[in-house]
Amino acid sequence: TVLSPGDIFVFPNKTYHVMGGIVSHNLNSVFIRFDGTLMFSDEISAWPRTGNGPHAHVLQCLTFYNAINVTFTSSGKGTLDGKGSKWWGIPGVGYLVRGENRPKLMDLKGCRDILVENLLLKDS
Image (cartoon, rainbow, N blue to C red; front, side, top):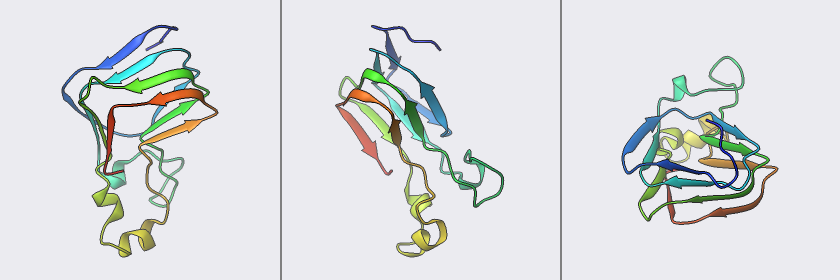
């Protein structure tokens, strides 16, 4: 989908089961409204990675490159659910197994004038 300045992209009030590795480049002056829930997969072996094998670096849930003047919001019900408990595993042990190689819910790279409001960031 191509968004133009002034556009509003809406995730309606439903639950969407998605895999991570969602990437966007060069958004400018748009609104992204999460009225529902994006529930990211907890299938660690199927998660998108930068290379082959279980030790390759995992991609983030959502990555935005060079976004300018973008608002991430909701009508009050928006949730990004990373289902992080499986990534963390047994307290202390899960970190030893994966270290920092687990996805962040949202990664903003080279972005400016970003507003994140009215969103529940859950189990990242």
